[in-house]
Image (cartoon, rainbow, N blue to C red; front, top):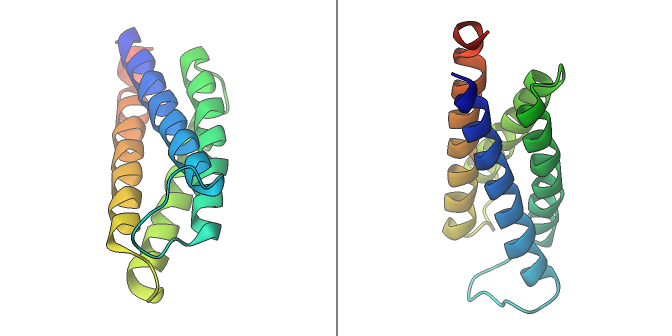
Length: 121
């Protein structure tokens, strides 16, 4: 069961690094998209990429703030996804799909670390 936390940590690190890498390329003009890009959404993704890497470290250590970090990230992604899907008419389907992917990964991370917590201790 100890490997569950390591798996969750690696997933958090990868999704965080991907968000930083992809978002930074867009913000720096290295990668241009053929759809409407919401700069505030790209900035959100880069910021949460860094937060995800910090969370990955906390998960790896089984730090006391692990649960709070996971819930914060997952809740933020869920709220933003809800907003994008139902209230923002300018968002590209690619952006919604990317947020669905990020949110899904964080659901898996939450299930791995929170659902199995009692079994792994």
